[in-house]
Each structure stands twice: as structure tokens, then as C-alpha cells.
Image (tube, rainbow, N blue to C red):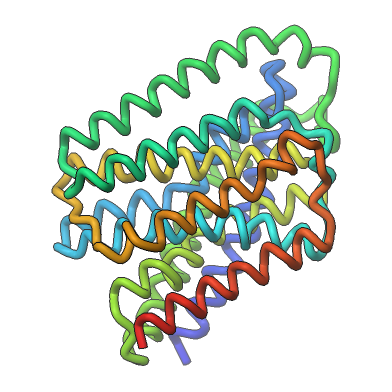
Length: 315
């Protein structure tokens, strides 16, 4: 009973922190004259990926590196199919007006680089440095875009932003979000994992499913709030930026802590599911399709099918 209450408490913290982070990020973009997309690709995405980073490092230290890989691969799949699917199913996302083409291609490139590195596994400090170098290149490019977009951003105000919001309040929102998200995720995952362990589920499946979904809840909370506020750039940018961060930074740092053996099942199935889920967004990004309820239903259904296959393989 206490574990159930702990999991629910973590979920509540996640929702409140997600709202705070979106408010702070959107108003920070207004204050700095930077497009909301750039902020969501950095501050929001990095903040919502904090649980995956903490879990990956701890997993390597504890001698269960498969949990770290399963968490990242499972989270990236869940980010696209579940994190975008649920808000699209209930609220819809006006994604046809989003400007995420470049960052989307960077996510695909990061995914392909990670898959290539995985086939040369186990992932060691050498591979880790390659992944981190890829992240450095992306951040440098985003910084240049932020500087070039400063003048244009000054002419357009992000919807729902408060031009009169004081700096200390913006900082407070961001701090509450960045602290609350990993705290809530940690509380939820810890209790949910204890429940799953009692049911006799393996660490690999826990990483790909329960822990992956649990650590994706910050992204889900942030994306749901962004969908409610019609901030499509924040929603898509959050998922894209989080997926890039998961692959290049989380595995990069974990690889510096210790080697990460890549299970054969990942090479045969899970890595390709992760890539396929990312490619599903191509028409949304390049053909300017809105993520309506039909899209939401399809994405959620695909994720359910994936979970059934993973659990079936475990059985």
C-alpha cells in the first residue's frame, strides 16, 4: 500500500513540476528574445531527461548496465509513441506550425550514431567520447541558431507568455521544475520497480518498460501541459531534445563511468523499434501535419503492441 501511495505521490510531483518548467521555459525565451523552440530543446529537454541520467549512472555503478541501456532505448520509444500520443489523443497538437525540421534531423542522426556505436559494443569510454562529441556539435549549432533568431523572436511573443513576469519568478519556476521532475520520477520509479520486482519481472524488461515509462513521465507531464497551452514547439522540441540528450549525453556519461554491454536482443529488435518510432514523425515535421486524435490513437496503439511483444518475449 505504501509503495502505491509513493508512486502516486511521485506522479503528482511530476505534473506540478512539468507545469512549472513549461511556464518558466516559455517566459525565459520571451525575456531573452530566444524562440521557445530553442529553450525547449535545451533547458526543458535536459531537465526532463535528468531521471534517465541519474538511473543510468547508478545502474552502471550497481553492475546492471543493461538497465541503463534499456532505460534509454525504452524511454526514446516511449517519448515518441506515448509522450506525444497521449496529449494528441486528448487535446491534439497543432504541430503543422512547428519549426522542428532541423532538430528532427539531428535526432535521427543521433539515433543512427547510437545504433552504429551499439554494433561496435560494448560501449566503452572511446564510444562515449564519440557520443558526447556529437552532442557538442549539436549544442554549438543550436547556440548559433539562438543568436541568429534573437531579432526575429523579439517580434513574436510565445502564446501564453507573461511579458511582465519578474526574473525571480521565472527562475523559481525553472528551479521548481528542474528539481521536482527528477524527484518525482525517482519516487515513482523506485516504488513502481519494487512492485514489479515482487511480480518476478526481470531487470531487462523493467528497464525497457516500467523504468522507461517512469522516466518518460517528466516528458509526458511537460508535453501534456504544452498541448493544453497549444505550445506545439515546446511539446515537439521537448521530445526531440530529450531523445538527443538520452542517446548522446546519458549513454556518453554512463560509458565514461563503466562499459555498457549491448544485449543481442537490442541489436535485433529494440534499437530498430526506436528508430522506426522516430521516423514515424517525418510527415508531421516535414509535411506539416497536425497531431490530431487519430494520430494520438495510432501512436498509443503502437506502443501497446511494442510492450506486449517485449513482455511476450520475456515470458
